[in-house]
Length: 185
Image (cartoon, rainbow, N blue to C red; front, side, top):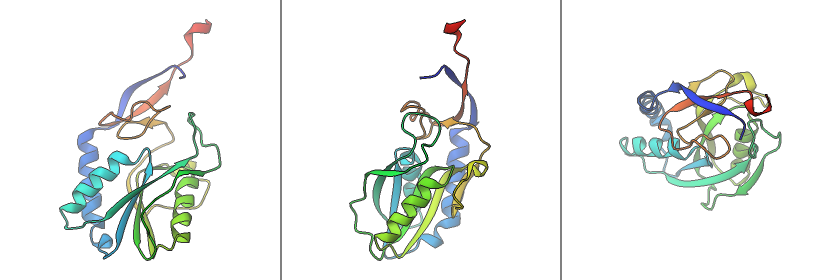
C-alpha cells in the first residue's frame, strides 16, 4: 500500500446514524411495495445496507435482501473504467421493486451498470440509494434517488468503504491522506 494516514474524520458514527435515520424517514413511503427487494453492491455497502434495513423495520417494511458484487477498482483508488459482475444476485427480481444500495456514487459507471442489469432481469422499478455522492467525478449521467452525503473529490474509508481491503471496520468515515514515500530520500 502507498504510504498514507487516516486522521481526518469526515463524518462521525453519530452523524452517519442520524443521516441514515433521516434518509429512511424520507424514503419509507416510497419503499412500500408487496415485492420490495434491497440489493447491496458489495463490498462497500454492507454496513449502510444493514443500518437501512434495521431502520426500515421500524417503518414496518420487510424487504427481501440480496447482494451483487461488481468490480471496477481492483486494489487501486481509481476506477478502471470497466465494470464486471463477480457475484450475481440469486433472488428472482422479476416484477420486484428494487432499492439498489451502494456506498458511493463516483463516476456513475457501477451504479448505472447495476441498475441496467436489474432492469434486464425484469425488475418493475429500480431506485438507487447511496451513502456518498461525489458529483465532481461523474462520467456517466446518473443521479441517485436517495443520497446520504455529498462530498468533494477525496478518498474516504470506513463504514464499509475500504482502501485496498483495509479500514472497512471503522465506525466513521475518514479521509485518506497519501504521504510521499520517505524511503527513497
